[in-house]
Image (cartoon, rainbow, N blue to C red; front, side, top):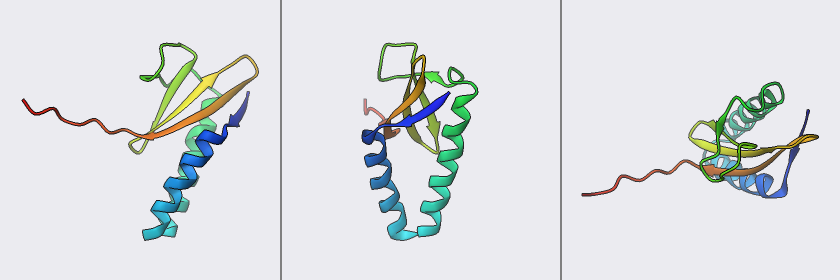
Length: 94
């Protein structure tokens, strides 16, 4: 199965890589390479990741990588990687 990276994903990823590279270009490269490997593993078992917390659809999944959520859609022909966000759950003060 082919993996397709949509522009929305690429734009957000590039923005985050630039931010990381500001302090450490080496860490930005490591993050990018590790993320690519994690996404590549989706090909073999696309439904192995959790159902997306953002969408009510079994074909949309979340890959969690180092606190980031990569959202992808499984279709008959390919996998569309379209979302990239930081998992930011805030505590609620009582």
